[in-house]
Length: 194
Image (cartoon, rainbow, N blue to C red; front, side, top):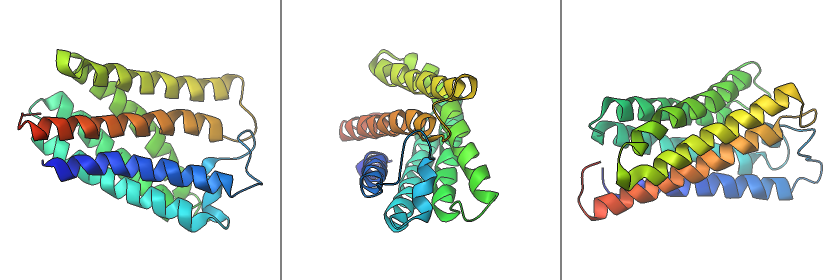
């Protein structure tokens, strides 16, 4: 895996998070309490929103395959395989918008569940080494924040929509994935094994 593959993991989430933010800013009707983030995919900002999810999913899936092939440890390989499936699910959300029911629902659930499982698996994997401890801690933080967001939504509720627990999963997950990409770039520049 070379430096270019690592940049995919950095640029994909930045592009998606920036496009989601822009889509929300351009959508005066959107509220965090009453909408799902995917509602943006069937309104005038749909091209901005959907293309970013598709592009991010593809870029991050390519990175996940590269990392999976290069990791020596089976836990690392398994975690990146789960992450690859989460990335494919993210692409599916962008392709199968809310107009394509029930496909959109299945891809959405798969993405959020697989992302949290992947960070739960990869967290301890990265914690085992001193030089990657920050990746392990941050991966487990993604898992905790995401589970908290969804559990609170089910138990108490953030409102009628699911935008808040979605953001509490996707935003930390995207930031963590970008950090992982930066770590790979740094490792590759020093020609170290993953």
